[in-house]
Image 1 (cartoon, rainbow, N blue to C red):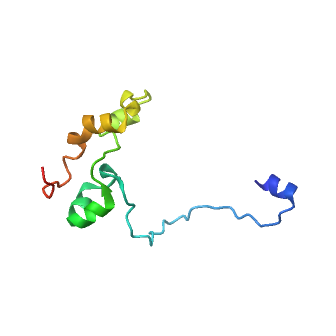
Image 2 (cartoon, rainbow, N blue to C red; image 1 turned 90 degrees about the horizontal axis):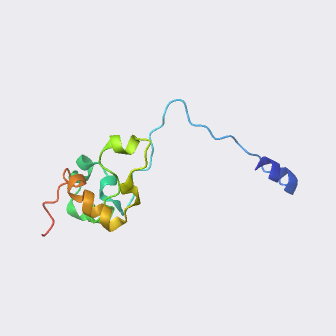
Image 3 (cartoon, rainbow, N blue to C red; image 1 turned 30 degrees about the horizontal axis):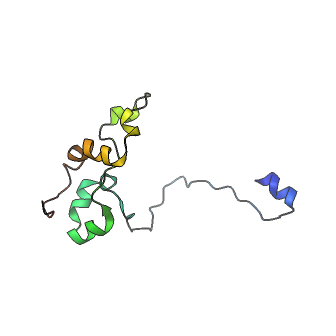
Length: 106
């Protein structure tokens, strides 16, 4: 990038970006929206009213393999190749267990 700026004649100063030594808490308080359900921590998610849960999360999809030992192994997990529908069928019950779904109509 520096090299290309020199060649093109740009003189905008570049500043190195580095993290602060003491972490600064974020001022950004809004949760990301329409992410799969297991993206959100169950305790935090269960405290939100139903309307908020509906707006924040995609409550019809999960995205993460639930066990860490599989996730951290060097071998490629064959479940990573599954499509969304097959992945949800396989892991839905296991992943959504800690989430409160009493408001849902069966």
